[in-house]
Amino acid sequence: MNLNQVKAVISGGASGLGQATAARLVAGGGQVALLDVQDEAGRRAAAGLGTAASYHRCDVTAEAEVEAAVQSAAARMAGINVSVSCAGVATPGKLLGRDGPLPVAAFQRVLAINTLGTFLLDRAAAGIMQHNAPGEDGERGLLVHTASVAAFEGQIGQVAYATSKAAVAGMVLPLARELARFGIRVVCIAPGIFGTPMMAGLPQEAQDSLGKQVPFPPRLGRPEEYAELVAAIVTNRMLNGETIRIDGAIRMAPR
Ligand SMILES: NC(=O)c1ccc[n+]([C@@H]2O[C@H](COP(=O)([O-])OP(=O)(O)OC[C@H]3O[C@@H](n4cnc5c(N)ncnc54)[C@H](O)[C@@H]3O)[C@@H](O)[C@H]2O)c1
Image (cartoon, rainbow, N blue to C red; front, side, top):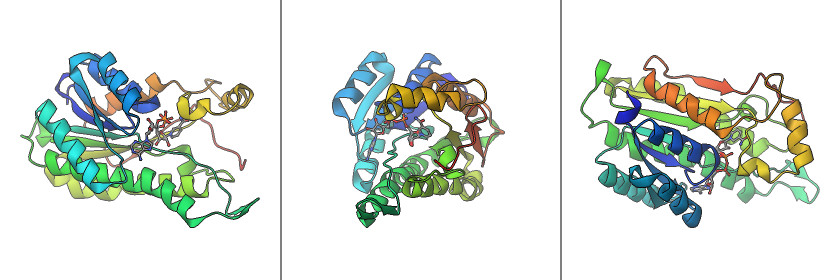
């Protein structure tokens, strides 16, 4: 579909990759609804994008909140044809940590936000998209997941995160196959290391060292580069059922 036809819900839209995606889609003439739990940042991000953007509070782990946010986003934009799941956490933890085995609740929380949250947004958004009028080739919508290179090369301390992201990638082919009859595509992006608030938590030295591990270009990815890939996926209908790495050829070491 053309960027100026986009009506997108973006989870995690108040920050980092989600916020950059919102800005790119609005720059292309589309409308966006930012879903997040950071109210102040979310409202500020939406206001900064003008009338084409709105903020809707929603914890992606809560089915009713996701349904309500997606419904209110659809009402505001007169429909939804793109959903981008960017809400996520990367809380580390070893199976056998210094303070004992990884608490079950810690493992479950990462899976709830990253994996269940993606499923709940897909579920709510696709439920609306299936009724869209078909566009070219019968296209009705697009679901974008955000995995991570940790889905394939999880490091020590990433058992929960890598599991959650492998699942997000694993959902893509069965969903693309199932939703083909509605003309809804499903594509996953697996970023390497990007300079977002998620990364800003690390000391500058650690960020620089991570950047140098990227073969080319030897730096952290920019959120705008992720957003540009979302825009390319939106406009290219042959992209479907696949996980695309955007990582400067990095392959993560064990630690
Ligand atoms: N930055 C990286 O290097 C990198 C690499 C690979 C994958 N990713 C993935 O990309 C996605 C975006 O990450 P980012 O770097 O922009 O991080 P970020 O921390 O800047 O943004 C994540 C957003 O998700 C929101 N969020 C967290 N829990 C939520 C919940 N329960 N409900 C609704 N919103 C919630 C946060 O409030 C935040 O605004 C994440 O899924 C992350 O795992 C990031």
